[in-house]
Length: 191
Image (cartoon, rainbow, N blue to C red; front, side, top):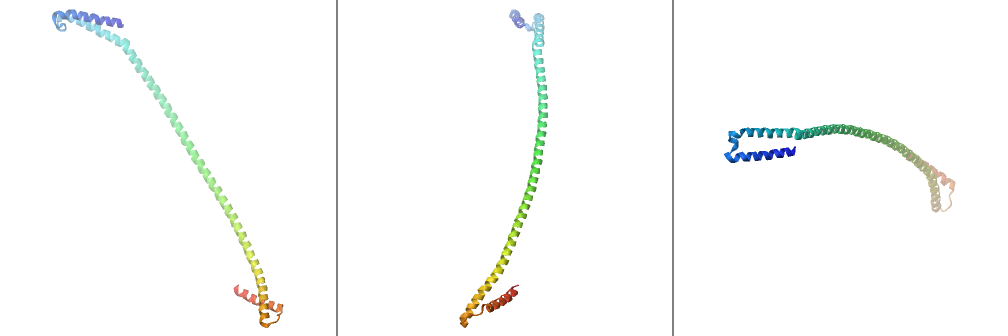
């Protein structure tokens, strides 16, 4: 087909050169109009055939190929979009579930912590209460022991003072009775 077209172009150039040399501008000369119309029809028909048989199928194939590729790409993009939306929903659900689970864990931890604190507080309060009771018992025992010790010390000191003043030994039972009487009077005043 290419050779035919090339030969046609060469023939046209030779034919036009032969007629153009005699009259100047052959395209305006009515004598050459028939040959010009003939070659015009041959050239345009050849161009029509070349475009119709060679270029148009290639262009149509390219357009159809692009169209099908675009449709396939759009379908694939739609599938990917749907997949992405599905994954996004799954992700949001996972995040929501994780938040709920974390909230549960925090609430359980707070409850356990509150229970532990309450137990520890109760235990500490019990220990403090026991220590207070022990301290009160010790104070009572100390009071009892100290009063008796104070009374003994007072008896001895009183006996020694009276001995030094009088110069003779005093009956310890008398001094004891006097110190106990005075101690009882003082304790009654303090209570």
